[in-house]
Image 1: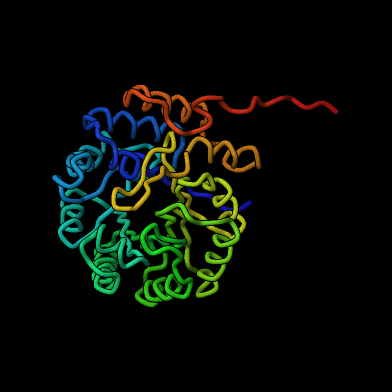
Image 2: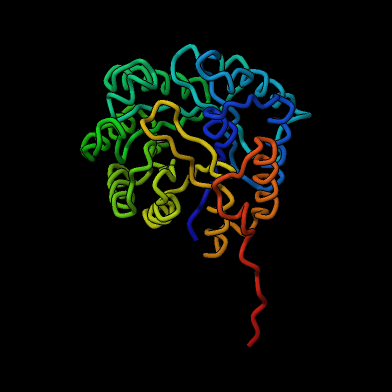
Length: 306
């Protein structure tokens, strides 16, 4: 049975595009609920400009809260997104031990998202990643817009693999491919992840998939077939990059877990608790979320007889 690590990104990627500002106390309660449900990792926020992404303004406070041993999650490891050196410094200052950072394979998306070209961002992210590793932190680096871009269209696979090789050669071995625009197809996902792992079997691959065009779960299954270890998803299917042309939510955490459990994987995760949380988040935001299970609930488990 493959090792599957669930990385919940709803508090970061899910909330960054929302108009409502979620109070810090509410975010803390949601992290605690995710931890109790058995999620492995929680991306609690991002160290970005507070005026550009006001929903992330309390990220420093969140990490300081959970740095206290009395508040530390029982199982879930907290991660944070950083885009530049200042964000990395802020993360170090409040005790972050797992950093996520990335480079867009689309130069247009890179400039809109970070103000840097792909070439400039690559040099800076590699330097940041190596610095974080030297400080004893874990690092995941991603190739964003790896499967297509709303501005540029198809992205050459050679460009994606070149970025993955550069990460690998710099000693960064946890590599994510992100379907930022939601353009991926299952055959493309399986092919690209297989090619990344062919660079070096020791690379640990992660997938960050969006459901913009309804292919999220199919692409997650393709990633599973390709040996991907880390699966990023957001409760209720929330999320989307505010700097893409057409924004679509992430693969829905509870829907992904439901699919995995129907296949015999991750029975330890409390699916009902995830569904309850997604419904609570929807109630807080005052609207229906896009996930399936928030509407239907999971398929009942029937006892079989012989």
